[in-house]
Image 1 (tube, rainbow, N blue to C red):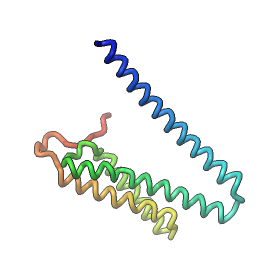
Image 2: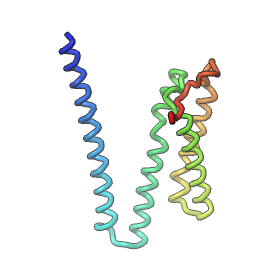
Image 3: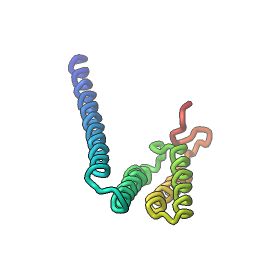
Length: 146
């Protein structure tokens, strides 16, 4: 019986490692493909910079919007233990500072993609406030372990 359960654990670990490895290789392929496209295929100049700025903006927006699935789960369960408070603070400060920097430069490639970071951080702050732990001595969210 123990041997059977160890075998199923091994299969789970192997499939997890296989998934992580394939995702890592895919991400590396996307980075290498992007580098080739922007440095070899596109001619240097304004068009290259505009396409690079748009691509980076799309990646930044997707990074800031990625926690939305977790936010729906938090609202459904009423628990913020999936969230990291320190990461929320860091995201808010970083996206706000980049947005303000973009405003100063009048650069939409900096300003626009960082705005969703401010919005999602404010939503997470609201969720921390709304679903705070009843026992105030024990936080209901993840803290940084040093």
